[in-house]
Image (cartoon, rainbow, N blue to C red; front, side, top):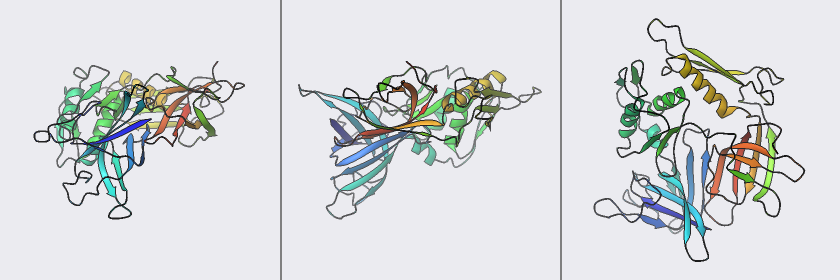
Length: 362
């Protein structure tokens, strides 16, 4: 097992920040790792956070390497092979938020970091800004994000340049809420990935598992627990949009109509709808796509699994996995909602899921 944390200047992207020119760009420093982990949560505004302990120097002024005044941490975990080569998996860029030392002056230093969405959330706008009808989604994201991260890389899985606002929209102080409303209206999720890129994309297909959390001597599962909880579970999503001209108000509903689902709309779970209003939704097909995406991301919430397993740093939240309990139980497809990936060799990886298809497969 290998892990690496490098302190980098803000705004870099990619999976290998490398050695930078200390004069023109700023230095990259690798710091020792005592313990630490990266936590991912698909349901949180800030998808990933870092907790790190290191024996590096505590910053005594604003120029200190670990001072929370702009520097970021690029985190990786990987495997070192017998020939000495190391395969790294990037875990993302983290803005330093706090630095603590319980036993000064020589004790270990604890650093807490948050991914770059925290910068979007923190950077409240001082004055409103108006986007006219006909503004493209890509142009709006470039402006709102670019004021915070001028060199940001944004990736879409749709034609952002030709997806246009039908009406005028006002950006108030909350950049994150503005961008999230756009993403929701298009049925997309929005997060910063392991390369520091902002992703505005559809969630992965929940039907196609990418990994098996398997039991037994040849498996990776250490322990698995299960729970059922209906709190926060919905089986219909109502999306209300913006009325354009003399058209009727826009409305669409997505229902859980799978009879095998634990939250089947016409089943014993009962009818539990959720309603949202989004001014970026301006026609019924768009409203329907947004409602369908919301339902797809939350269906099956009542049945969740907590697992402890041999770490696999390539797994990501929203990935689908097969969960295998024993030779006598059917495998189940679950979607990962949270992951905690350790940065030491002694700690196992943990995660939580929600099930997509109640009753198992195979």
